[in-house]
Image 1 (cartoon, rainbow over the protein chains, first blue to last red):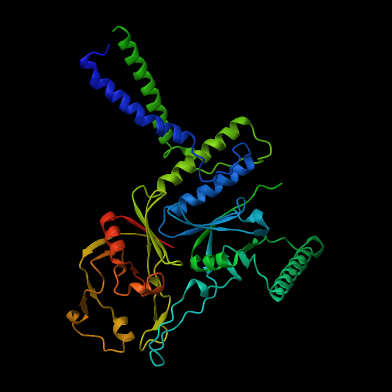
Image 2: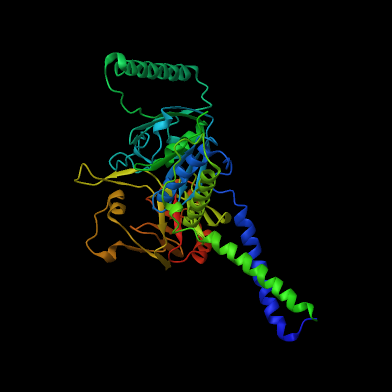
Length: 226
Length: 217
């Protein structure tokens, strides 16, 4: 039997119990920023913590940043730790990924021809829009990192041929360079420059070109080595 | 009647336990594992204690990142698709069609190397001012664009009734405000400000406070 003088205390206890229980349960079950992460794989955990460490620094600033998650094949446009926009990567290839373990800054955004208002010619204003963005472009970062963006749904055979020639030329250059600084040449090896090729849908390539602004930081989450 | 003290004791211990667990989970900021990088030389051979340390480090960092996110309602502006969202955590309170910066360039007269670029700035900003029936103080470029002489007196720059019923300033002369040209909502046509229709503007004005984050991408 409940005594009248105990009723207020019991109400407070039960109220606090109800408030505390869901909080505790939800926190225990939180997947964290990388829901796909295998918590028993040390290499994946180490990479995820490295990315998180970089993100915490970036999320505290006023600038938006890019997180390229090669594990989930997603590009995240982020600000204050929030996912502002997501782009799905069709496929990717990465040269020298082992060197891409830091925060990069975009040196120059994709080339865009901005309409200039010429008052002597016409009073008509033609604004820049998402449709004016390129779909094939290269992003250069500091420290050195290059990201080549290509549309995954490109249908033009000439375009595909051009892309293949560029890729072959790059592979040849890399081979020649490795030979030149290799042990046979008696040279010392230089630090490899990471080179990432991303194939993303046509309209999403435009979205990335729109959002990638000068000085924008970038972090890459790499898949564990097999 | 004698069972009630036992019930109280049980409730008290249960509650204390839950509170302790809850507080321990929240106490992650000053711990060295949350700030210092934790590296393991060869991740292939990891002891159970190292793995536990890595897992704890990951959880601590996850909580730190979560704490940096806005916990109050915030404004999100998508300049590519010209939408403004009013959000609270993952809930969208308002999805409004907006107009943002045109991205055009206007050369400054007499200064060949300088120009105005009409972009909406990107990044995180905060509501700095909330105005009712704002007056527009026209900048120089308005007169240059219209082929007019730049006025000498400040009073000649002021125009009433073109910015709508409310305006929210977020720094360097940029505002979220209303428009007379509602047919242009959804397009990149502004000089950098964010335009909304009257109803959406009113809702944003009501929810936003001084200090409300505005995240623009």
